[in-house]
Length: 214
Image (tube, rainbow, N blue to C red; front, side, top):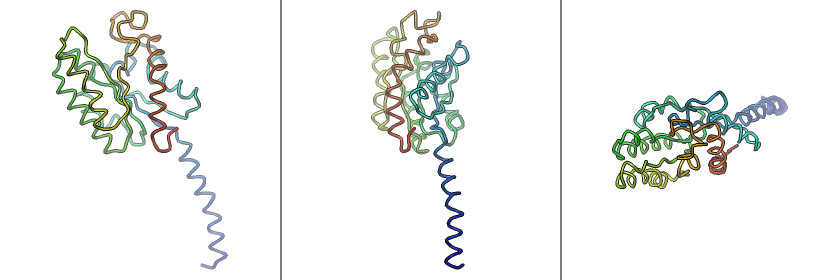
């Protein structure tokens, strides 16, 4: 091929290459909220759940994101581990991992959620997907020993895998009648608003830590 033809071919390919790069950059930053009914939006209306409101809050701040809802009501860490690989699609950049409440409510040995969450974090790390670990706290009626063992799961795993930790997913909502549904377990729409407001700075930091974050 002559020099002139090489230049011509390059001029043809350059816009196409730029277009491909531009298209890749146009893809929203994909986040998956992976958890139980607290993530799924139990008993809430359309657009009232955590993932919808988090997406709206991030977009309002100019971040090009898409937040998927992979919450399943009643899910335990064992159930989450079983469905992790297919519930978190390829292309996901960040997972907000929120599981353990149902293990705790059933009085499951803390070793079980610890091991399951450990395996989930290992798998996501292997897939090079960033994680924000959302912590849970044990109910006091389960006893001091259980509470100590369960509550320690989240900070210890966050340190082991060097991932950001939001210490308590229901911060400001748990035990607050105006922020919870009548069952005393799940957040109301107003409660979700507060959850999103409080976790938003941590989510933004987690996004910023991902190369090419939104």
